[in-house]
Each structure stands twice: as C-alpha cells, then as structure tokens.
Image (cartoon, rainbow, N blue to C red; front, side, top):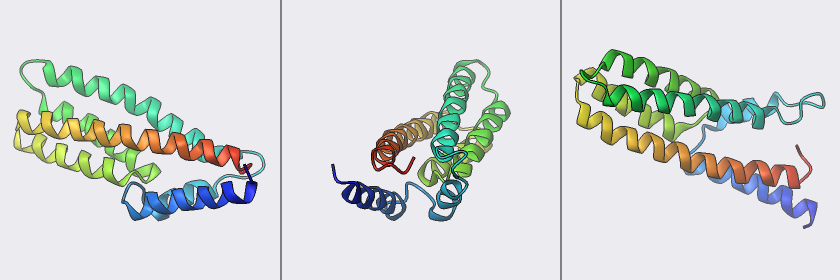
Length: 144
C-alpha cells in the first residue's frame, strides 16, 4: 500500500481515538513525542507494558472480589494502580470506568463493583484491539 496513504490512515485513526474519547490527545501525543531514532517504538512498548501490568491487576481484582469478606480497601488500591497506569497512556474511557469502580468501593457496594469492573474490562479490551491495529498501521507506514 502507498506509504502516503498509510500515513494519512495513521493520522485519521489517531484523530478518531481522540474524537471518540478513547485517548487523551495531550497524554498520548506526549508519549509518541518521546520516540526517537534510538527508540522508535517507545509508545508501543509503553502500551505493551501497560497491558502486561493491567492483566496482572485484573487477575488480582478478580481474586479479591471473590474472597470473603470483600476487602474494599484492597480492591480500591488495585484499581487506583490500574487507573494511574491507564491515565499514563491517556486511556480516557478506561480511566473513567476505573473511577466509577472506585466510587462503588468507597460505598462498599460489591454489586456495583462487579458491574463497573465489567465495563473496565470491556473498555480495556476495546482499546487494546484499537491500539494493536493502530501500531500495526504505524509499522506499515514506516514510522515505527
């Protein structure tokens, strides 16, 4: 495929992320600006680290939610870490879902936690698929 066309497709895809609220424009742009000749895939590597770390946090949250009695403080701590990591890559929708989960933790509402955790996982997975596609386009365009 034409390199120019691929680069336009990369720009369009990224703009859609911002317009649809998946990513924070400033945060993600800053992440990409840290790339240079010595580390041309920096943003993709950071996102990959985020997904490795968040998979661990998801497992920890799931294990904590099924243990009795429910340790809401522990759940909140895990979700605080998850939210911070999400924020660091600019994952707006994931961060918002994390905030909702934390509100249910503070209220001691396990059912609310369970419902909002499904949203956290859903937004997390949607963004992962979108970013996987995006970084594949970036590589094809010869930018990464």
